[in-house]
Length: 397
Image 1 (tube, rainbow, N blue to C red):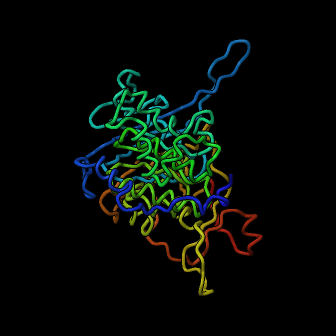
Image 2 (cartoon, rainbow, N blue to C red):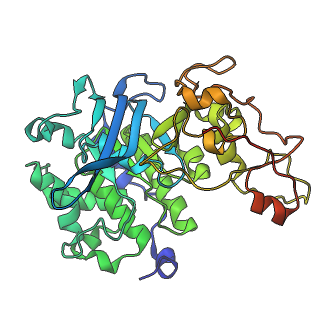
Image 3 (cartoon, rainbow, N blue to C red):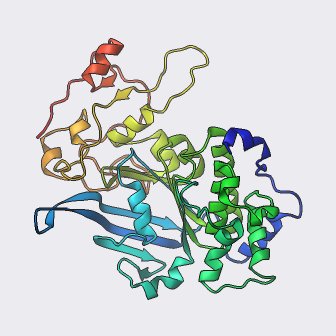
């Protein structure tokens, strides 16, 4: 069943009076943090994940490693929405799986509410699992096709031995109504739903244990644009009414800006810039953040020349098996100098940044997105096609 065919059947985000909205607020009553809450929920220091590459014959040995995540530092406060953006392959999803401890970190520390869970045993993670949940990227493969919706959403409660008042079935039906589905869908199978409806089932499953933190791994990337808006609005409603903190992973900068209060920009396994939404989108300092924002299309309804800066990078992200020395962005950066190859820039607050706005760059840009005197076009082929002169960049090996 396609999204187009079922979009009109999908319920609106508005909830009928006396419906899910009341049950949702009752479930979150007494534990919803204030919007300005500074209670630290999650602290990550030096988080690293290297996947070994095995080779050799007849005896296998490690011949290298994929440095998927390398020294990530971040914090998430209670009730906060924290966005994580970057190009495909930069390590966003791996970071999310590390935070939920679906993957074992190679190094670093994950502190959840004062408890170090970096290398906690399975038994020690049992009480944590119910408080940290995940919404997966693919709404098709993340649901068991042999189970009904009731079994999928009620499964976490059964595993954790939770018997809510009125029984699990009643609670599952409440959750389905909360996410905008008909409670009568309880006995249906995943193949009977559209992509947007399946993702709503995934959201209901994540809410079943009333978590304090949800890792949303590109929850709308596989959906149509109209359905994306419905799911994002649903997540915002859930966060507002239940006070759940979100780590929202995506490569769509517009959706991240709409949903997140703070944003981190990731490149080749490292966070290169982090700050509040206004700082990142209006006053970015890292060249890579400038390049990402300049790539976002904007409709020019007046037919006037775009007044934003124009940056076109050359090539793809380097291989995480053998990343560049020093600053990992230097091989595609128009401001790279000798220092960038020998010294990795620390993630610090530089002069002119607001409090909490950190940048990892030796030669940061000005916090201005207006058009430059010359467009930065590092790809010679693209420059030839568009008839512009590309900015010359000296490659530091």
